[in-house]
Structure formats: structure tokens, C-alpha cells
Image (cartoon, rainbow, N blue to C red):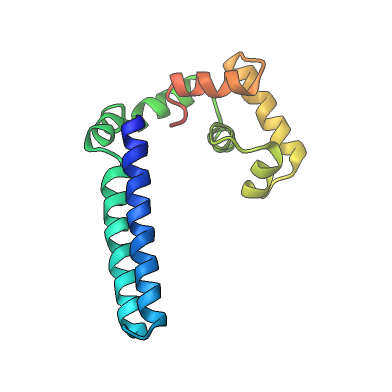
Length: 145
């Protein structure tokens, strides 16, 4: 880990040196504004490509997320088994996304008291007492992604 910090620090120092050199050359009129902009563009393109390759999702992470994929058939079976309405399923998916009651009300264009009623019915149908328990159980039953 320390090696990565040293490499990153050295790379930043070199990049800063290049930028300072280009700025100096611009001020003493050795290079024009177009050349300076071109150098900066190339520099940022290289940094962007490097960041995209190193900080993007690895192929193994993508394939593991697909192998644990969401099964819509299991969702339909669970919704039918627990007698969850379409609106309650929408509320449950927004709960799983971490939305507050007010955010759910705003997104579904319903009142706050209606959201609370839906959540109360979801709690009773899933036999849970708290929001986190409802989300956890819904995920285990394939009711939400």
C-alpha cells in the first residue's frame, strides 16, 4: 500500500513539473496558447484513460454480479405468496433503495400518510417490525433487487 502512495506521489510531482514547465514556456513566449492547450488535453486524456482502466469495475466483479442475478419469476411468485400489491411492491423497492418516506411520497405522487399505510401493511405481511428488517427479508425473498 505504501508503494502505491509513493508511486502516486511521484506521478503527481512529475505531472506538476510538466505543467509548471509548460506554464513557464508560455510566459516567456516559447510556446503558443494552442500548444499549451494541446499539451494539457493530451495529459488529461492519458490520465482519464489510466483512471478508466484502473478504477473501473473489473470483469470478474461484473460477472459475479451477473451470476447472482435477480430472477423476476421468483419475484412474481413471492409477491403472489405474500399478497403484496403493485403499489406496495413499488414502495418496497424504494425502501430498499434507501428513500425516506417523504421521498417515496414525492416519487410516487402520493401523500405521506399513504406511504406510511403502505409501509405498515408491508411490515405486517412480511412479519417484521423495522424498515431494515423489511428490506432484508424482501431481498432474501427476491421481492426487490
